[in-house]
Amino acid sequence: MNRWLCLLAFAVPAVAHADDWPQWLGTDRSGEWKETGIVDKFPKGGPKKLWSVKVGAGYAGPAVVDGKVFITERLLDDGQKSPEGGFAVAEVGGGERVRCFDAKNGNELWKHDYPCKYKVQYASGPRCTPTVDGDKVYTLGTMGDLFCLNVKDGKPVWQKNFVKDYKATVPVWGFAGHPLVDGDKLICVVGGSDERLVMAFDKKTGKELWNSQSLEGDCGYSPPVICTFGKTRTLVIWHPKAVVGLDPETGKRLWKHDFEVKYSLTAPMPRKLDGDRLLVVSFYNGAQMLKVGDKAVSVEWKSKGKGETPDKTDTLHSIMATPVVKDGYIYGVCSYGELRGLKADTGERVWADMRASRGRYTPKKVAESEEPSTGQPWNERWGLAFVIPNGDRNFLFNEQGELIIAKLSPGGYEEIDRAVILEPTNKMSGHKVVWMHPAFADKKCFARNDDELVCVDLAK
Image (cartoon, rainbow, N blue to C red; front, side, top):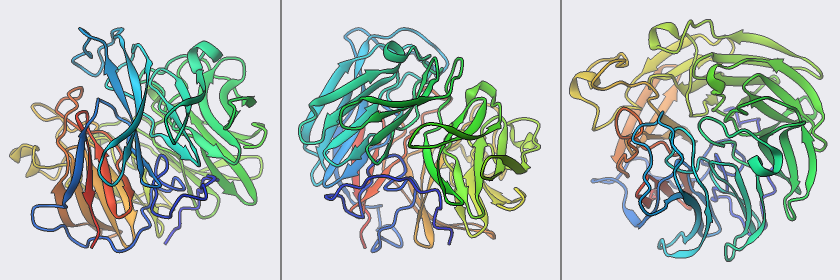
């Protein structure tokens, strides 16, 4: 099995356990859930709900560390409401909140509120999963509010605002690059002017350690990640104009590969593969497999698709979910909800299956078709399911709030079981969805929508 060679140099605190989920995509940003003793199938009626608590709106998944659950949420001022549609933009008064709960029972331990007016598309709440490191938790809000808080009580240690402090442009869909801890540094895609696209801060004090790269306008949505190519630790930044490799200690650029992405939609995180290869996947422009050398990058293969609609795609056009790589194959959800299997060496598609992103609310006529629905009344554009490897199978969480157990192989998609754990609540798409990556820790799944945070038991 490919053991996810793209490893984050995350300073796991001494109190953390192997079953924690301290940040975006887990302990090492591999997205792999490594616990054993997990159910083979769900019990009748689905996994047991251990607790549920009321929360505000948000796209950010939870982090779980040392018996605590951390989330961020949107607050609205009295008389204010979010726009009805995802593409509508209006200045909406309110704030954001960081909350910490007891993982055993859902009791709130503390909360931290701050004012934050929204003026973005899809204005339903924060995008970034909290990053927990030792006795500190780092959060990044939709409008660029970066906080370092004490894990014990939520008191602020230091804070930044990317717009006010660094003249950054708020991305069309808000700041979404999950902050990255590397040793004593907190690395962020800031989007600031004057060589401040990427910045490293002292994680304890907020002192600026280095800044690097410039980019006009939208900085994109892909989170930073550290990979090792050959013997060189490299900070990979994928912004709307290029994929760049930086020295994580200094911010010095090591290499650059031009890749201009339509509408700045650089959302899925780049994946490192065997042979110093790097996979990047975008909704409009498709996928590219890069070969990273000491100072230069070459293209092994890239999408030849003519658009993002199913009939015009060839490799993979993911909107949000980061693909999974295993045994020479790539598995990811394409532009209209198709879960696809590709050969990693060539990008050739070997199969596609719609079942993972569909669920109980999919109209019968749509569900009976093997092809994505591109029209009304049920358009499957942006159809989504997150894929989380666990041993020789995968847990998938789809946009209808269903948790699925399935095996993925070159032969196709083999569904073992599925259960409902949440209701889709977000109304900014064509139909209600839940676009949130769950956390898996202590043999449990922690997931949220715009109304509640739930904890379900997945132990055998």
